Length: 242
Image (tube, rainbow, N blue to C red):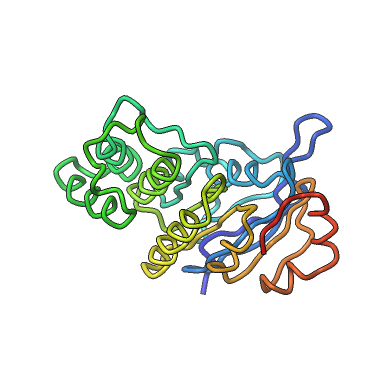
């Protein structure tokens, strides 16, 4: 079966700073892939390359078997790629519901009438239905992170990219978020999740890759990867749970 996403020797640099170094991997439909690496390793840059906010210098990216390496970000979103951001930046003067409605109508191209019910369903799924009419700027950190997730889901993705969505949460909040992501997996959406809270990743993902200086240095079964010496050396001095 064709992989939903394939990166083929993707490279990107800014002068002497390399953020992607011949990066290659595939993601199967419905698979959840975890991505770890130290700060500055190129993880978020990889997401920017997948979503089209950065353009690779070399290599190519394929989504559903089609090259997307030169497709604009909006086109990739319409094709079924959505993401959350490490630092939530909702439209703070709009309600939670209005934030999701923008994602559904602009990201997924849904007509407003049809999008209304869909957005309410997503708010229910992400635990925000009681906050639907609350201004997004008044939300707690956990609620803003849930809104990031809801907005991404309202774009109707086949591939969901999560960028450190558990960062800054309490243990209880993290557990609640993991439960929500597990529910999302049952819908068949493929997931790539960048996270420093490794125990959260291990509860969800099927496979783990490790990136350092823009290069993939390890890939495989999550617990075996975390036990490897190379990974332990990379994380020396970095607070990691798990």
